[in-house]
Length: 427
Ligand code: RNT
Ligand code: ZN
Image (tube, rainbow, N blue to C red; front, side):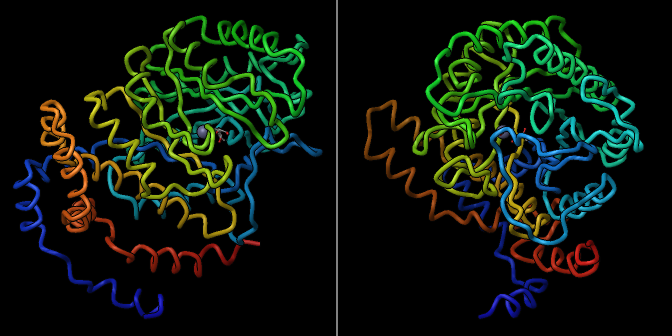
């Protein structure tokens, strides 16, 4: 069957019986009702930057250092203004079940045409975003934008040996925390996540110097605690043009967070190709709080592909749920695919995270853990295997129905309609 014909029938698609599915789960000791409730209630913070390929709303001139990240593709319909981003996200949000937050970068300030540099940004430049989130009942999170700016000098920001450069970015990060504070005042606790691109392309001669400067700069930024602002530091392995050395590496950020009592951010694309973040969660949670997850997908490198409901994401969700510390883990998305419809990218990525949460909450964990405790390795493996046979789809459909969003593929027809009506009119 062709996709077009398939989409035709999606509206009237027969749904599997949820009541029966619930009984099947109950028979393995799983409460499907509770799982649906917990999956829907877990906030997922949607990143704004999928809307426009991480371009932002500032008027900056000249070629800028992208900070080692790159959106590839030129699919038509990119959002070019704050209004277009908001409209596009409203469309995506209508197709994503469960509690959402909105995660903004500083480069999306709206200054009414006036040039305001990043170290001068203030809450007023985000008033429209804040009101819009309040209207939609979404919490907000925030990120200083330490890339794509002329003050990134020799690829360095907070760790630069030049005092003027370092101080500029310190001021920007301090301003960002003030903005996060304003968001928190209106909308409840707000994450302020610091990621910097700093690193070297080749043959790094001094690795400790920039790290020493970064510690000092972060200490200055985070000097005073801000009520209801949740500070996190995001590590990275490498970037494009920054292959040899990253100042804010995994060890650096994790140790900094543990030593200073702030949160840490694990981005699923920021590790060696076969290294996942799932196993890091239980270790980190014993020393650091919160752990912020950037749900992303690397393909061969930190390519920021759209998050999918794959083994890796499922393993991460499993670990969060099994740790019993889900309250100390925050979920956010981080990907930017410019080669496909961007609203579909958002929808697929965010639905996949919600789906992974439901999957983890529907696991017969007690059976597996009791088998493990009894030294029954085969029993544990068998329980793990049986998960794939359980009627997961019926529970997911029920979750979507309760959230009043389309199940199955029906959302795709709506994205296509929006594309024809709205996106195709953009130059
Ligand atoms: C970059 C980090 C960071 C960015 C956003 C734009 O590798 O993942 O989170 O993607 O801040
Ligand atoms: Zn990230």
